Length: 597
Image (cartoon, rainbow, N blue to C red):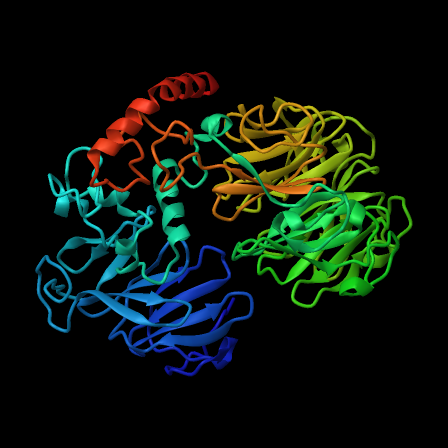
């Protein structure tokens, strides 16, 4: 089907067939799947296309004969090959920086204008974001994207603050993504210090640290309180000056700047600014009744599950005691009813507001934003709700409380409570509270199977961005389930209580909601009266090698043991003393990590 383009050569922006292109050459899609960036060679332009609507706008006309295109993994920058040049385009404002090449052709290695390409360039950025491979007619070139070159100071010149891992090679700049002024003066100038740290952790352990999750248990302060006083009342405020009555499930906005969380017994939807940790009320009067309306004019009765549309503009809430699925405009707080008559029971209906639920709990939305999956708790079923129309239908579940595998209505659940969908949109992972199982549901067919791990009283589940790991909560504990081999790793918590920390020293006071951040580096936990952060990447960037901090490390605690995070200090003696002071904790952590693995 047609997304955009009239078929006539031109440069007109517009929607669908109203827009014009002149020789489209390359295309790349942003990581969130919402936008396509297109190079138009004869039009000498780079265009932006909204995939859902076909709206076409021009980002820049400053690149001559643009051809190849590749996006950085954070989705902020496009690397575009032009005629004899490679250029970085900031997608937020369309600004262009030429990284290599000039208007003159040739075949010359080098930097800036010294580098020469013999034709139009087709770059492709490596998964770690540190370099790109560029193809021209006769050659394949490598373009370094990290502006810091560790080998430039490899040796005795340690005073500049650079560092090395082992041998000083051209590849040793992998560790140069340190949070310093040096890294903000080059290619990644427009990106934040924290973003650079996050990329470091990704490059070391993968986006979800697949080889390091067992170390989360022994990483100091893996669990920290970010909001909530513990008072058990509803108060807006910043951080621990705010209070919750029933903090539980939540959802990140696509930019990961805001977290929407249900306050179950406060009968509200709360909004948390993840930069300032300011907590405000998006919607809900605080009275356990039913009312559609805007902001505090609306009412919920024990909201439980929440999910956001892929573009972050709409929220969907399982309103337990109102037996409804509610819809929230995130910008305005306008609350309406998408499905559910309010009467408990089980009934599918082409008119969503006539359908019946019995305590809808967790919910998740497919990556295309078209379908909600709802855990219909008392009915022991997994329901589908069409987002556009509210039409409900059965995906799986017989209605009997059991753990029978099967297809559609042949399968059974034991009070399904939490749910998440894999990034590819094919599979849902559901937690069954009474059968103490995690269930796998093929969304296209309704086939239900049971994963092997057993978890006591599981409440919620969230899947990492790579789709390989499910982070599940239950009975005061957080666990990671490998979805490939079904192995399970304890991350934090062992008994009831209320304490930050790591391993068994971390305590949670009740049921726990969980949502993994879009970066995969941490999760937000709703723990009744507090909101907590669980670090999933055990590498602590810019940490000091010190026994009191007990940060994760790979080997002995010395100048190079935080290869991904610590700048090579000009004071080698201070590193030596740090190394000595922490040797005992080093061995204890090594043994702990080995046993966890």
